[in-house]
Image 1 (spheres, rainbow, N blue to C red):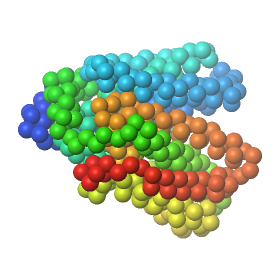
Image 2 (image 1 turned 135 degrees about the vertical axis):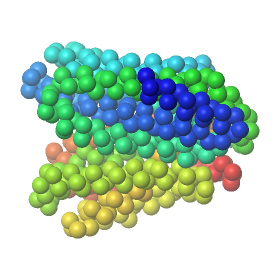
Image 3 (image 1 turned 90 degrees about the horizontal axis):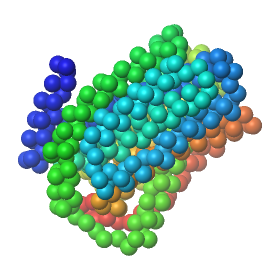
Length: 409
């Protein structure tokens, strides 16, 4: 209760600052922290796959179906929820969404039938679908004009949660088993308490802030087809980014072990260095977009990784580590700039656009991991990285993005 009271005081102070037009860092930090908790809870699902497979005698196809159910609810629902929130803002959906995550982890902790596992995965995905578009709206409300910075700080919480998830699974879930997920369900209550205070700020300050910011922004009317083409290009860039990231997050340790005969522990250290670089790149991308223009950052963060991705499959062990760190830094800087650019292409649809891009990134990451796994099974793990090396070349499509003017570029 004491922590909740402190959170309320901090958020109310942030609300007072917003009245004067400043960036509400207290609110942004609060949703970034909840993003960390949310993505850490979501990443616990794969941790119980080995136990579920042996206990319930599941096939790999059935395990894949669990992932598919989660991905559908965690990705396809996001733009629909965001569109609804744009038309009928619902601040209390933020803490309410954590109840789905709470229910999902609780069901998974006691699931001893395949049907219950699917229900738990679906509930977990719904919790993520509610959280991301609404929280991204809050980041824009609290930005005070520094939209790229706000999106970066919000997104880095998710990156940290994804990195901490496997560590939490190794320390707790692997040791104590499936039932230990009930302990992590308590984190949903903590997140709900923080988001309750964020929702109060959202209702009393955020909505008016968003309206004032929209009215004062420079709006450039684009033909409908041109805006749609811009969104399609940005989604193509998200495809290239997240499929390539899936190759590293899912298969980089296998690549190091197979090619260089590294131990599992050393391979994990290399993966951690890459994930840390992704977190740093995410923080840097938004402010750079605010300072130099988002289109320039998108150019650099997709196409700029190409020389390094092309070199990685042919590099020795000594250079593989630095190359993946550079790739992580460059690629991760794209997402905040892409999301804000898309929000400015379609003014007034912050929730829908946020849900579309977060959902699409989740879906592409999941489908990319599955497709690359099939490729590795039918060729080799080295072939995965040789093929994926060309994905950043899709960054050439950035040349066809519309110009929004110097103020909004």
